[in-house]
Image 1 (cartoon, rainbow, N blue to C red):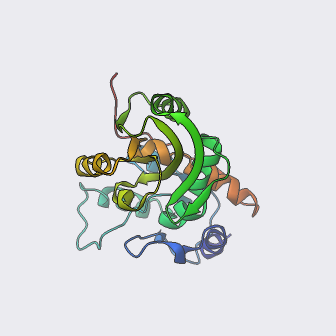
Image 2 (cartoon, one colour; image 1 turned 135 degrees about the horizontal axis):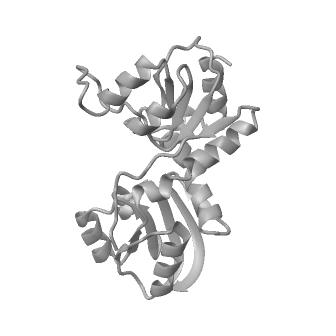
Length: 241
């Protein structure tokens, strides 16, 4: 297939027009008529991953490599260093970020990872009913995501309605209508706001909540007879219990 053909399939899976205005999903690196022999999928890219890729291939990631306009190329900085390696190896890069959150990733994590039933999605937020105590919810979330430690804002003792946003969802706290909000990258001031609003929040981690992207994307591509290789990438954050 040519790169444009793969892009068209991805647009069918998760329309790029659904991405947020600030996002940069779509083609980040490559030439439309390029022939693609191998397709890799990963939540993100680092130097080790790029070194492992076959020259002339395509890497599909959740996070775009390029977010801000590039005014110069500094070989020692990020994302420039990875961008240079992709170009050297003639590797194309397409990202599906906020559009894929809305169409696939949030619902997948809610239903497949957390086992939720009756999930309703409103933009970036998935809602579902689950009755449990707050302490029970902490254990459930820790076990579901395999978390080594938990950061949370204490919420109501009795939980009935839960909201979920993978990645960074702290900016949505004002609009969340639930007893418990599961999201990543919880900032201090968002935690203060949640406490004042009486909203329980559990920080499920950015990487930890989005690391399922590759397997979801690979399964979707199979429906269009495209075999993708899952390229694992390591969480840059380390934890010590």
